[in-house]
Length: 525
Image (tube, rainbow, N blue to C red; front, top):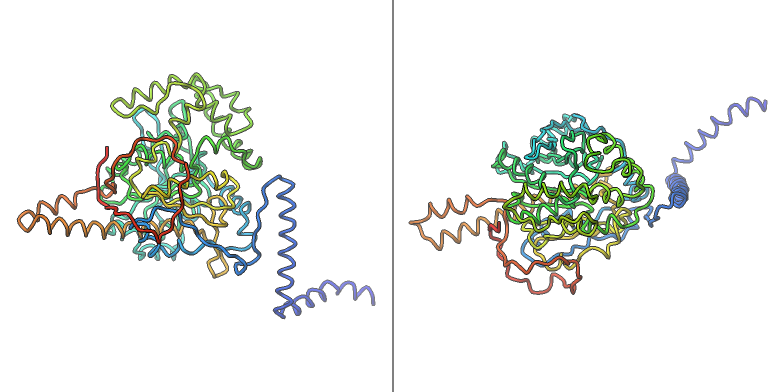
């Protein structure tokens, strides 16, 4: 008798649990208990691994989140606040999706296939671009979606075609990965969503990154823009009718911001966005990251260098690099060693006729950052740049180090700060039981709103020219207006060049009187 009862006990318990879960209050109580238990265990694991812990709400209803937009009050800023609806809706998710460490694991560290033609539901095709010095960079074009239903939606989505003004010329989104060159699930999701909305995404891989072969015995410095400039010029020459946009992931912002500053209004870009950007490169390398993330980044970087150890030995001490214990030591050994002096001399020779003031011949750490800080030429940037930051980002220095004065004083910079989002994740519950990336939605909508703003401004400028010139010179004036490049934005007085731009300024709100600011095309270089 008892043997029969004991053998049926598991089945009876299962039936009892199934019956009890039919009552909503019991089901909610059980789910809450399991969630609390899992959250407590997760906190214990984070403390054992010495990872910073953050307070995460158990439900989206408990979140009192908002997006704080910091920018200079201009016509473009007002237009964005009115028409970029996603920017006003903060990313809301509950644990565990809202936990920054969970987001880093799933969106940045999860394994992907390097250089594969099929990743994340997107088919890629690669162009290898031969550079002037014999180096090679790779352009991975996202050409189609594997999901036929999503592909059908993409074919009928107006987003990219609207920006490109023609179905055969969609807007090209240049995507710049992080500084170590890893293709992350977050980046693949951005390609997927951009392609689905009618854009034409292309991933830029630096030399030696993302499966791109290293044909020269050197890597690019953190803020060296020569390779990116040639790649963007190639895109513009082969797609002259397409609008060029750019978005960077994490530390990849160091390259994008450097490029925008060096090229000024000749960058060929209409707008740019930086997700979890690094504003101060030297501070970021010297900042003590959680040991687990730094160790993983070091291992990944060492595998890259070890692959070309023989060729790189002529330019750097590879053995010492492979034994270093921090990203700062690795960067310093790679680019600040005496052997790098000859390479910088070669760079200055290759850039004859250009501004070589930033190319210092001193192979030391401070001089390295004088020519590689992302914001070294911030006063030259002439396209709108949207930066997305989160207060719970464990891979960046505190928000107090963000140069808010730059966003208050420059009409080109906009900063959106959220309470949760982690690093390059910003997970958001879509209301259908799944999660999506809020940052992807914001960036793509931002590109469309900016393009719409400039289209309206161009029409206004065109009407002004007609009114001023009269009907006799109408044809000539029209050709002049329409031939102006869509890549350059503002005409402004050049301020005295400043190196220190992160001094905070007094805050103000949009209720203050707006300054007169004309959004006209111009050429500064």
